[in-house]
Amino acid sequence: MASGGIAITRESHGRQVNQIVGEGMKACLLQGPAPIETNPLRFTDVAVPQPGPGEILVRVRACGVCRTDLHVVEGELPPRKSPIIPGHQIVGVVEESGAGAHRFGKGARVGIAWLHRTDGTCEYCRAGTENLCDHPSFTGYTVDGGYAEFVLAAEDFVYPIPEAFADDQAAPLLCAGIIGFRSLRLSGIKKGGRLGLYGFGAAAHVAIQVARHWGAEVYASTRDVRHQQLALELGAKWAGGTLAEPPVKLDAAIIFAPAGEIVPAALKALKKGGTLALGGIHMSPIPALDYNLLYHERVIRSVANNTRQDGEDFLRIAAEIPIHTHVQRFALRDANQALNQLKYDAIQGAAVLVCDGAC
Image 1 (cartoon, rainbow, N blue to C red):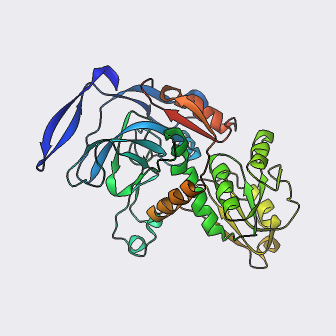
Image 2: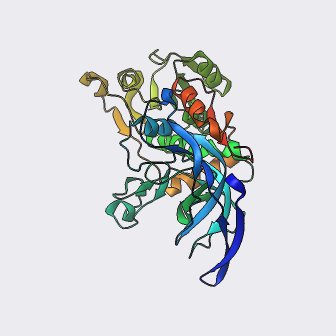
C-alpha cells in the first residue's frame, strides 16, 4: 500500500473489523478510452475503498489480464464509469468485511470475477440465468476492478480459491477459465466429439484442458505459430492457421478471437447439426453469410457473461484435473505493457499482474 498506511480497529454492528487508513493505494487508472499503444493507464495513488453492507475489501495478490480489459481500455465497450480501474480476474485475501458480510473471515483467499453483482429480482435472475440480468454490474467495467492494491467485492459473488492453485495460476481461471467452461457447455461437445477452437489465448488454453478431460478431440485454429505449438503440447489433434480448414468435420466449435471474419470459416468446418459458440464479449462485424453455411441445422450462439454456478462448477473441475495455466507475470505498474503484448498476440497463455509487495 502506498505511503505507509496503517490498520486500526473499529466496531461495526457489534463486531470488530479492520479499517485501512493512509494516503491511498496504488492503482492503474483509466481516465478515458484510448488506444493501448498510447499507454493510457496511469499508475497512481487513489483512495482505499471501504466496504459497505454485504461487501468485502480484498488485498489483491494477482489479477489476470483479459482481452475484455483491452476492450474497456480502448473503448470497444462503451464507457460506463470514468475514471475506472480495470481488471476482473482477481485473487487476493480478505482484509475487511462490511456490515452483514460473514461468509469469509479476515485472511481468507478469494477470487473475484467479471460478474460483480446482479439485481436478483428480474425475470432472468428468477429463472436461474443471472448472466442475462437486466441490471448487472461488472468488475473492472461498471465498478473498479483489480488493477490495484485493494478492491471491493460483493461477498455473495466471490469464490473460494482451491488450495491447489498458486495466486498467479488461479487468476486466469476467473474469467478465461469460467467463460471458456461456459462456452464448452453451450457448444454441446460430448465425449468422443470433435471440437474446434478458434484463437488460442488465455481462454482456449484452459478450455482445451477441460475438453481433453471430457474425452473430446480438439482442433486449434490460430494465427500465431507459437500458439499452435502450445495447442499441440496441450493435446490438440491438429493445429493450423486461423482460417485453415481442419482435416475433419467438427461437432462443435468455439471462437475466442474477437474477429467476425472467422465465423464463416468456422461454420464451414462444422458437421450437420453442429454448434458454433462465440465466446467473446466483443466481436468485429460478421460478414454476410451464405445460407448454405447455416443450413442442415447448424447453430450460432453467443456466450454472455457467466452464472455463479458456472464458476463453482468450473473451479471444482479445474482442481480435479488439475488445470495448469501458462502465465506471464507483470508488475502492476506494467499493466500497459501487458495489454500491449496481449493485443499483438505476444502472450503465451495468460498475462497476470502481481502485487506482492513490489507493485
